[in-house]
Image 1 (tube, one colour):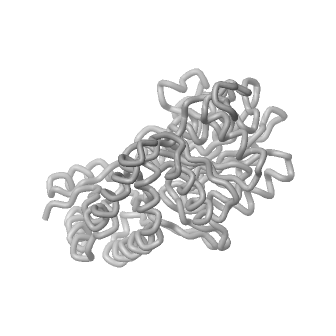
Image 2 (cartoon, rainbow, N blue to C red):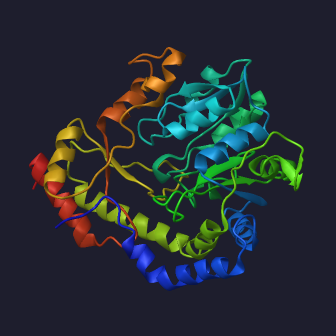
Length: 369
């Protein structure tokens, strides 16, 4: 049985006519930027994410970049970020001229460990940027309490966890201003690059909107040094269709994760995903860990099962961040995760027999009955 890491067909094929109709409306409307589809998506996503405002932008990295600019964070400032994250989180900090300060994750959840944050705070610290990695909500109540204690801003990186909750509150609604991604592979994915900013603060929402559109409130009148970071009408139209199905797709992902947990539970050499108390997991990724990661990955490849590593090199060891002076061993938990993690196939529409087949191949590798 050949099983790719990701398969869009199960979600895209049933929506084909809806998506074609959405495209036709944009095409026939002859309005392609900052039109009715973007306005509708901003309203629809704000309702889904239980926030007052959504600003539709060009991608997830731009969303984080604008969020930081909106908070006037820049050169001389420090932003706390997890040592275990995709590079976009860190790039956004660099884009505004601030310095990323890494804090280790909890080895069980892979998310930033709130108990380690205070030790990283200095007089230069201006914000904390928690990442809801792989789809699991961070411990946001604790993080917000730390931020309030030290008068810091919080920017959630919600790119992988739309719809996740902590203490029954949805991610992307805790922070002062937050960024998310609608990259095609995300749980809510466009048919190209797209992103969004969420906030409950009107002034921040208005400033973020201006920054994303050349710094203008009125055409050809520039109040800020802004950017061209707008979501186009086609992507907004597609996302308006797909948003209606997101809750169903999340439930399907959670069911697939339950199947994996059931079929892989007796492999002692394999660490399965752990969900923290009070947190929910939307399983953008189903990540396991093993000391034999590379050999297992090769074995699965030989059996035509797709896998990926999220992520093989922690940000502090990337060549692009050699200027920070970090060395191997500085953030051992992030490094251990990078050396042992493996993402297994998961997408809405997967069947239990596919999960069972993958599990049986993994059992063959570990010689478990």
